[in-house]
Image 1 (spheres, protein in one colour):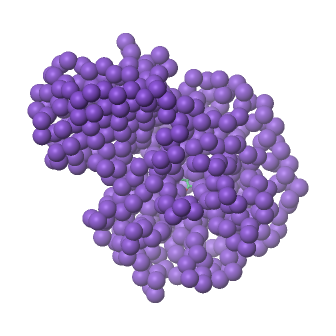
Image 2: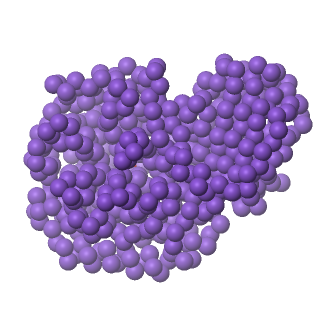
Image 3: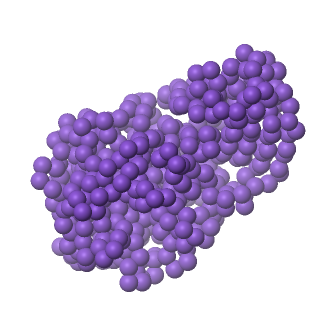
Amino acid sequence: MGFNAKRHLEKIQLVEEYVRQHKVDIAKHPWREHYHFQASVGWMNDPHGLIQFQGKFHLFYQHHPFSGKWGTMHWGHAISEDLIHWEHQPEALAPSEDYDGWEGGGIFTGSAIVHQDELVLFYTGCAQDRQVQCMASSSDGYSFAKSNHNPILADPPSGINPHDFRDPKVWRQGDCWYMVTGVTDGVSDLIEPSNCQRNGLGKVCLHRSRDLKNWEFINYLVESHGELGTMLECPNFFPLDGKWVLMYSPMGLHDRQVIYLTGDFDEKTGKFHWHTMGSVDWGFDYYAPQHFCDDRGRDLLMAWVGSWPFMPWCRGNYDTSDLGWYGSITLPRQIRLCPDGKLASEPVSEIERLRENEQYYLPCVIHESEAFPFIAGDGVHCEIIASFDLQETSAKRIVFRLRGSRNQETKLEFDLVRGEMIFDRTRSGNISALQRKCLLESASQSKLNIRIFLDSISIEIFTDGGRTTMTNNIFSSPESNQLSISAFGGSARLLGLRTYGLRSSMIE
Ligand code: DQQ
């Protein structure tokens, strides 16, 4: 159906002009993140197209540049040499064709490959009446031309709702290219996204191609009977440490936002036989992770820090949308598979380059009701690494008070009796939802190790050797910067506490 290069360029120039006019004012706001990537202007969600090309990391993301709310989507673009310092680039893709929704939903989530020295992008075109899969390519990695063969995949398998056929993730295996997409059968409502009660059952489609232009349907990797979700957004399928992992963001699974399944891939039938299920992250604000490998052989994940209004805890509030922007991206995490099939993750070691002002607190006992105050950078942009000896701990609960002040505090509680980690943002500022709980495996072990990253409005928490993580936004005022640890129901034996300030990674 062709490519209107002139219209595409004009649309990208419109974005660039708008960004130029608004970015300086937006950058001044104290809620802007210091070391989590954000679009310089506008709404952002799902990171995608993550890849190394000609020696640089490329990050693309869902972008609605013209307001702080989701709208007709574009692909924003940034590059980095170290996964930490990202440089904003001109918009990579703007909707310009009937098939990619230039008057509809726009250009949805996708992925990237390198083929014949070109950076090739796959994305969903969200046209008026359906979602179709499309391709674009670039020889320099900065300016992209859409394929004349678009849409390269126009129809979902029969019985699938054409409004829910999206998020192509493409990879090479043997002589073929494979693509997974998230689909649902039944009906959905694209016009009113908050009305997302899918009648159907989610599935992950597997297609195969020899030339990237003609795709044949192989099978459904998995089909939900309700237990996997009603629509499986942003699927990733990749080998990891001897097994295969299917990771996706389900609708219809309540607070299970990002699921991984570990198992074996039957290449002959195109079926995935999984045996282990887990949550990649337990936070309110973690969605649509994308997996990629770097040239050091690391398996990496980056995800959107944000929530959709249809999520039960959201109540439609976006605390920065009225400021003309929303959303950020997690720290890049390196993942591995544990022998029991569970996933573990940790931030890439490059993050340590931002450290400054190291503080070290000697081992001590924290007595009941005697808060242990500590310092970590400015208390707002920092890293905290703590370790407790649980054999020498009688406390029932260990509680971190983060971002504290007279009126605000965020509580991170480790309930050693119930075996739970509880994040409480009841008093974190104007924000919907109160507490999020998840299993704390370490409660039954001899040590509790915790690593916390605080940025202006986000908190990433790692514990249980990276098997339990939580990512949440808090919209506290910048003056809320006090930190302390308390023990309840007994004392807690602190083995070590190390903290760092974290410098800003923003490149203008
Ligand atoms: N966001 C994109 C879709 C995807 C959803 C639209 C997940 O492609 O399914 O912005 O956040």
